[in-house]
Length: 117
Image 1 (spheres, rainbow, N blue to C red):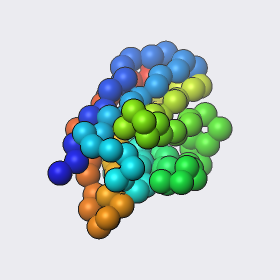
Image 2: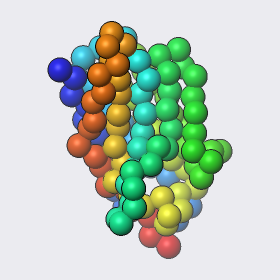
Image 3: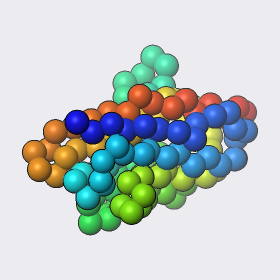
């Protein structure tokens, strides 16, 4: 069983920055693609960014150029650096990962990000 624990959310003004962290209970080497999703009130959960085991990244169009996903396998942690934040980025952000061995997926509990105008 893998546990993913997010941290780093909070309240920030528009134009500000936050860095989210997702700490895995086991080795990130056992995980394949890691991703960040978000869910705003009344909306469906959507993919924000993903990073493969080999470090290839992919971003939603709405965050491209502003957000950066990275992974530190030595620290078993995935990061989401969020710059130039906008009020529409307000959501609960979730970490998601799949195991390399059998593609079983795991979700974190989420961390709230609120961007004020």
